[in-house]
Image (cartoon, rainbow over the protein chains, first blue to last red):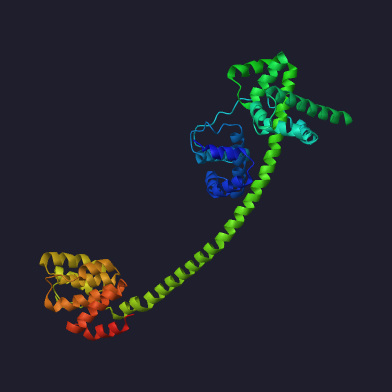
Length: 182
Length: 242
């Protein structure tokens, strides 16, 4: 069970919280990862990536259902991240048979979207402030339409849906126009 | 109508509230309808873009935190390092001093004062070569202490004489078997009177070999005060003790 206050902080952009969390866990976590077989620099990278995973999980509201302590959960993320890195490096290590988390089967095939992603990065900045905020709240912050309606004082959920749809259309148009100019 | 339905399903997919039935429904729509597929792919790309940007920003922050962490540790570590180095140096100096001191005083003193205990129990005579007494003491007097000890012990067993422990102890001392020497030389209640201070002298030497100066000192002081064996040597040794 993870303290709801910590989950709330992990969901936020609270710089002070993250810095304190970093300083509190950095030493032990890196030492733990080094025991798995990575060097210090690699272990620090794993620490950073694991923090990002923890942040994403908090944003996706999946930390509420975690039955173990935050430390256990966080270290487990680190362990799998370390194994991934070792796999990439093709290091020969003894991997113990342990329960491995089931990866979520992707709904759509993982196509190479790198070009589209690069274009979105540029064109997203050309959107108006309200569109940027709405899309960020929904796609990055993981807020539901209902939560956005309440937090941003929209009239109702359908207004938010309509606005989101308009923003997406606007972004697509910006991308298409950009392509046509080339 | 279909468009609204697909939009609703995509919305549920992104906010994580989609059920398995709805997910199957969305999968079917994705197969059948290219517009739905394109819409979902675009939104997935948008989400990935935002996550990548967010990850990049936080990686930068983590790098800054790491610098802060390292600087804090560096501030903490020099003191610990200096303390450790000083501690090691002090330990090293003490160890060296101890070795020099031990070598120059107790061990050297022991070596200077030790001579094997003289056989006063059984003066050897020619012609009794097969006798156990002769075997034990001739081996002892030849300086073959390792060979002499079993014979001496056998002789002690046969005669029941506690005095023989003096020679066994002395042999162990010569072999630097300090603990065995101390065990043999510790005063036994039934040793002859003329052996009492001989035992005491060799036990003092055994303590010296064990670097136990205080017990050696006590024995020597008592020997000087009350004894009748190696009194002068004991005085000389006592004056040289550290």
